[in-house]
Amino acid sequence: MSTPRKPAAGTDLDDELRFAYLIHDVSRLRRSMFDRWLSPHGITRSQWWVLAFLTRQDGLPQSELAHELDVGKVALGALIDRLEVAGLVRRRADKKDRRVKRIFLTPRANGLLKTVWRANKDFNDQVLSGIPMKNLHVAGATLDKLKQNLLASIHGDTDAMGPQD
Amino acid sequence: MSTPRKPAAGTDLDDELRFAYLIHDVSRLRRSMFDRWLSPHGITRSQWWVLAFLTRQDGLPQSELAHELDVGKVALGALIDRLEVAGLVRRRADKKDRRVKRIFLTPRANGLLKTVWRANKDFNDQVLSGIPMKNLHVAGATLDKLKQNLLASIHGDTDAMGPQD
DNA sequence: ATCATTCCGTACACAACCATACTATGTGCA
DNA sequence: TGCACATAGTATGGTTGTGTACGGAATGAT
Image (cartoon, rainbow over all chains, first blue to last red; front, side):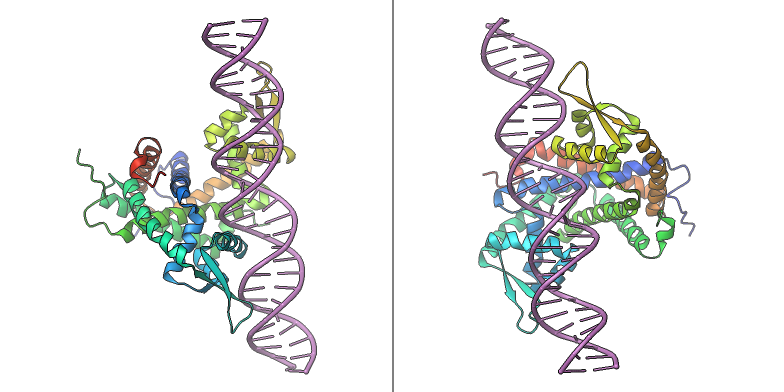
């Protein structure tokens, strides 16, 4: 396996930048479109993400939820605040450990979620239309590798990454 | 044109979700890594992005800069505020049109940029390492198509996209 | 039992982004 | 000229996210 350190000989800097920019761009576009699309429902993408996760694991402590969603405790706390005000979730104290507050969906949230789930699927269908399955898989694998590289650079590889002072 | 509405027959919902999540994830990871990496330099990724663009076109009006960077006028205004405080850019009034303020890099910014440019390249090299050129191109094309779909859904196609009430 | 440590959630401060509304200025049309 | 309209930048307020610091509660060691 001659996996070169660079993607390939002759790769132009602009190619790399273009790709980095594309990811950033597509991600931002998708988020903003989905947010706009979601706005009539009265929730945001981040809020939806929280609710969606709770449909699979209701009653999680805030910390675990934050970890699963890969978001800070503070950010999640603020999200829960708004969701609670909107009547979509409820905080309930854990009886064994008085530090933790578990988050539960309300019936109202369950109703909303059903609508949004299907809508999310339609959104994905539309956005992925005209893309051959094969390309989707190659792109998926590429992004996966990218993700691994990024994760790897968090752990041991940081000395090759920056000033570090 | 039989561009199917779905990417391909048999595409699983989970495939679509996985891909959407991958983009989101990779983008966020990359941003956060780069931000962390950039922090010793005293600027953020967004600020760096502004400066980088100015190296190619110094003296742009705020509005044009905002358009080029695809960010709102307000967001850019706030960015410029901070960059000005940090002594990295300067606002100067246009003589012909007293409404516009043109943004210029300071010498200090030019020094900083030189360092960050090369570092950014190293970062990209590292993150893209082990990815065959061919895959990068396929993934690029896929993301491009995705972007076009997203942009298209802004204009005419919204009736297939959501509740719209 | 007490003390240090660790963990949970929150408070606070800040960066970034969006949408809307506003001021000041320029432009075009009657 | 004068008035409607468009544009540049700012103000304001809301959402999401980060990092740091803090109080309350559990835990482990002595």
